[in-house]
Image 1 (cartoon, one colour):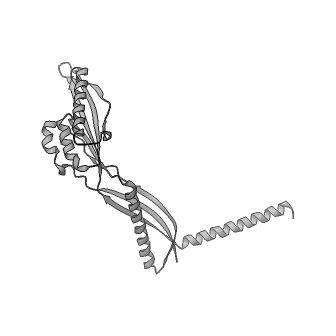
Image 2: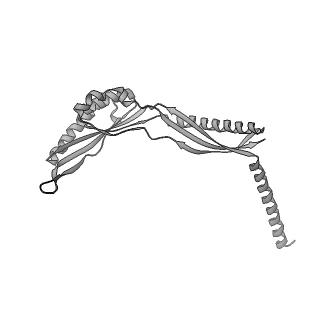
Length: 242
């Protein structure tokens, strides 16, 4: 048998094998059901990040900077007095900008002093400290509440819980459909995670405030109710029918 005939035989066998494999796959797909499942887990946040703005102004840029350093130091000391870990307190680099305002008489923008700005960022794992923290900091140097963001520490645990619920949801759907068709649900052929939504920490709208005016209301716990974070997982599962 020469090489030419040997090649023809091998090629023929490969074609037969491929056709058989494709046919088997087609039959398998014809006796399957594909369903999607969704799992939702609602959890209360146990972490919060607070951003305070320290803004000072003066005609002299050096004075504006000095005032800002003093205010930022006072704000940080107020945080430390609540027993917050030093590693959870951060201060951003100071920004110094020249202010300008419109002069109607001269009909043009004119210098209006300087503004120094920096942020104090505090991370808390004790949410009951949030109201007194904001009240104290706004009374001791900070004059802007830039934002509050909630989060959760056990992300992996919550993710796994949502995935389990998504798989259970998909199986329940498949059982309902097969029962309606007098069929039986077989083994799982394929499963995949389609989507996982872990929302960013819930933001609270940034607000401007004067410390003296805002302080009386800043310690009210209800003002910082975080609510719950909703975590969603979605899966696709292909079952064989029996």
